Length: 278
Length: 240
Image 1 (cartoon, rainbow over the protein chains, first blue to last red):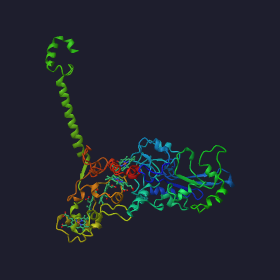
Image 2: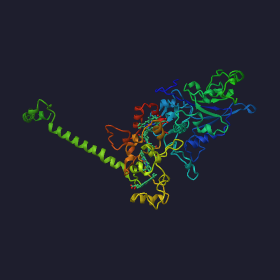
Image 3: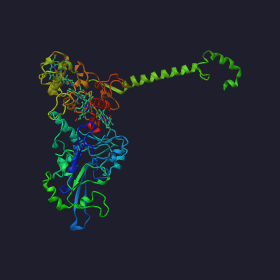
Image 4: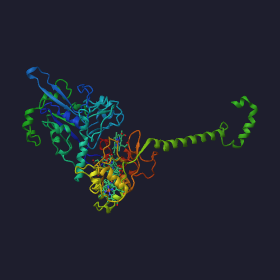
């Protein structure tokens, strides 16, 4: 993977690690995301086929009978695939692109023609179509919460998680005001990361060895969804449970190799800095 | 074919055309051809007038600002705004907030730092009296129309260009701050965008085009490319 852009300037690769051991499935990330990004609500928000949730929470179980049942929750933002994102290659209007400098997959609503190819192509179901014009009920005061930093969407376009890209721009402006060019890790954090009450989400630059994410992704318990498709998602998950990691991809019987828990905890990882909470 | 049907006419016709015979093929009727070209030109010119003069006049609605603002007077060094350079004096009103965002057009409380007493004007012009009566005495904000306002989906950062890029205001806004009278604000009836985005000339032909003439997507990108800022030409730099 290229670490520099064509100008020879350093390239960032923003990514996220979600700790499924910590996630309680409270759904705060979904709410924080919707509020931050002017995500429209429906009069009947329980219609999950049509509701828009950039950050979606799934529930998975190990499928065992009562005393052995285990449950895990699974927050799913856009994966911001790093290698030929399927949505980008099918887009007929160049409305979605992989930004080489940040690794963020952009979505330009005014360019989108609403063909929904990208929605079909996305292996993660991270894209949502606006079947109606945005709706923010006035009497509930929702319209007063609209953020001017995120442009509103219109009927007939696709939208998705942007890693709160406007927060990156905000952090850059702050840095410029102080005469800096580079931004600190804590200055650019997505809304879901900040909102998570158990701090299950870690966000940062995967190319920067000082950022926590770049260490976390090396942990043997970290995995990605459908990793073998080769799209190189930049959203990683962490789970110490084998059955959870196994659900992250479609394995043939016997193909999945469990991680040797004990060995790693004692020898390699426990001596490495960064993940002191485990 | 007609000639063959009526052979008696044939000699006279070929005689008439004989003076130009070597030049034009026989089947071409010169008079008709000239007429056709003439009609075409008349139509073309009419279409161009409609397209370049009538259409823009219809397309853009003209609105006047709520009041006149004399920029030239307020940026002149001798009315009490400190600052060595011109740009420093601009920053008295058009300032950056601490978080790097651009405050844009100043609010009324900036004006009332000098025009503080509605009863005693600083000069003796009727414009100032009107300004004091209509806005200062009631504490009412002036609803300015913004010439350079970009569409909702566009993200623009003044601090990146002014502080980091070291561009002067005049690069992009031309000699706007030398005006004594505000120009007419023209709004596209279809898109609702100001004419400053698409440029005053609908033909798009400027000769030596400057950023202040027009500020479409390509114009932003053109300057970025010219200044070696290609990394700022990906969608999510200028869009939000």
